[in-house]
Image (tube, rainbow, N blue to C red; front, side, top):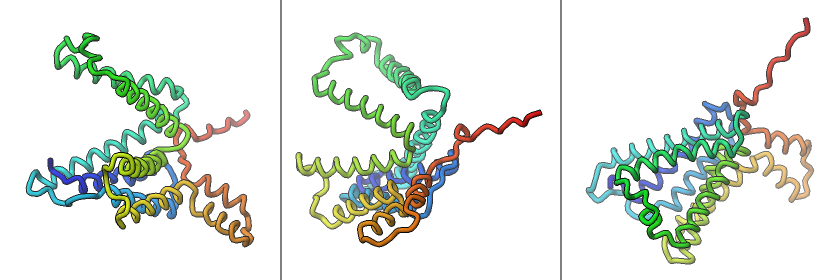
Length: 254
């Protein structure tokens, strides 16, 4: 109501740098210069792909209010993602136990919302009204996606989740246009530049500049000194030094 579609989609990408900043501040994650630039390129690429239409609200609503709400929502999303990553990587509970704990919160909130509309909504005939096989398929896909997200946070990090979501969104836009004729046109310079920037940003962040430089040397046939050290260094860049990763101090013998 307060922002156009283009402005909303562009401002929503603030969740990517917010997640990176919170990961550095809260989890002690180390991000080199190449990966930092690749995240900015990724944000620009996704913004170009999604930014279609007018950039004004045509006199409806307040742009300051809308922009503030979107930025606040992006910050909340980044905070929740980093906090969930910290919970998933804790040794106190397994990934499945954390999923059950988080699902209990959703059950309580969903049940409260149903109760506010009347207790008759808990009737199975009312609750499951309109549940076709398409709906059940979407529920299964959402559940499977939640498990994949938890696995990414457990074994990778929140920033990699944002990178994967950006690439998945790009694929969804292209498939939507190809299959249903909806979404931005694929032959426009804006979409093509945004696609190239998104792919380049995701590739550089995932592999790292050192690894890409090594592969470029290998493909060109030029010698690359200390290749193993380059790969190992690139793989260690970006790993956080969270409290649970710290080794306990050694006890001195009396």
